[in-house]
Image 1: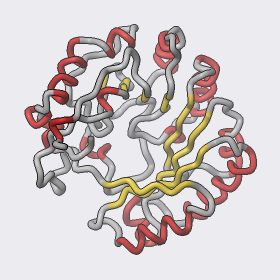
Image 2 (image 1 turned 30 degrees about the vertical axis):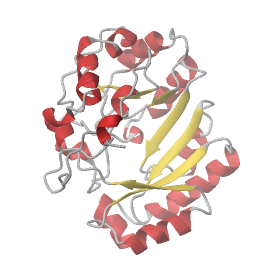
Image 3 (image 1 turned 90 degrees about the vertical axis):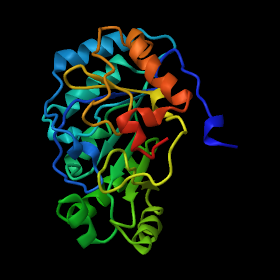
Image 4 (image 1 turned 120 degrees about the horizontal axis):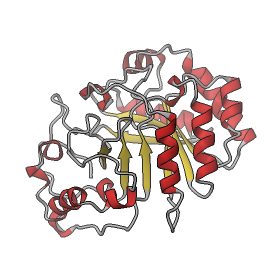
Length: 283
């Protein structure tokens, strides 16, 4: 089988919607693509409400919603309001929350567990050893104990929530021993995830083999920027691929000519003609 043997069909609706509610993050993770972008802003509550009203009319309902793209939701003072809005407007949609966990003290963790549609939390930790953690994330190592306490609390208060603890792994950041120690430690408490660090336009990390395989995310995921710009890519933090702006009808946007053209380039194995995609190993 060759890379060029693989293609994808486009569903009527996206499987996952990510809302770029904030560009702020208190961490400075070495692998994060947020630093390839100068975008800075927060999504207004009225805008979030309009999006939720639109999506609530879908049949079948949206499968999954993520309340951030590259930011840290807990940098917003109104994070609980936003999660409640999502849960109320989309009661049959799974709410998935990625977080670095540094804000999740006992009080916030208890609040978080009150969100009924929250089904998955991904604690993005990215290290096992304290010194690696501080160098990789720019955060204090004392967060590691707080994250562990938060995981344990969620396990008691909401055993239905799937908890992931993740490490973006690359030998330029961590040793294979640290990766293995991370898995061994966290598998007692959660489901550890090892995520390979993608190139995705990083100047210090470029593909050595031409990638022809179409990317799954553009056939399943959609991102709405804080300013209404649209994306369908996990790693386009700068929204550099022009897919237009939210029109008020997200289903129509998902099936727009710009989205269709991007998918066509990938299905015809011409992703190397798109600047960002040609420098990305994610598929």
